[in-house]
Length: 91
Image (tube, rainbow, N blue to C red; front, side, top):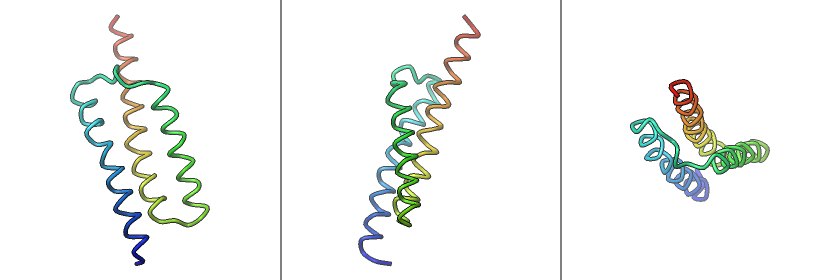
């Protein structure tokens, strides 16, 4: 494996892991009120575009990092929707 690929995988791992604390906090607090809707939607779309790009140029670090990051950020978005709907049904 080339040094650049190893560097890319390391960078992708670090930026992907950065989403775990937010996901854990959102899950534990059962709230995502402090997270902006527009930020989450734009972020998910941007990550999806990076994934399409990585696939088109066959860049393993970009593909791997963005698959995992899309899963994590989409999960946070899904929890935000879920908790909002749950709160609306209680009110």
